[in-house]
Image (cartoon, rainbow, N blue to C red):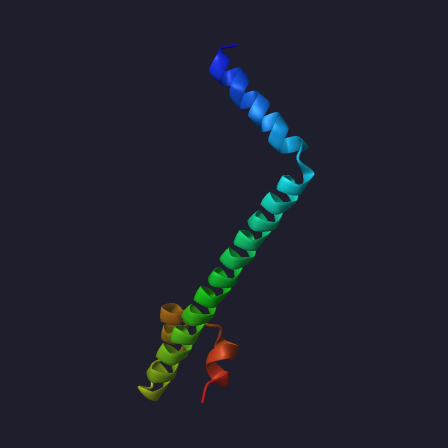
Length: 83
């Protein structure tokens, strides 16, 4: 094994043995995962809201429910509940 690889391995072992550092790394990873999940949820909610707005307009234009389902991805029940 060459010297650079040994040096990296020693550093990695030292990091893994440092519980305080590992806890900090775990906390940061958890924080990033939570942030990503919040962003994904917000995006999905925005997409759903947009689909509902489109469905409302299509209903007002007297489009067939099958067409609204096709273009929005909403269920028949969701469309029927729209005002």
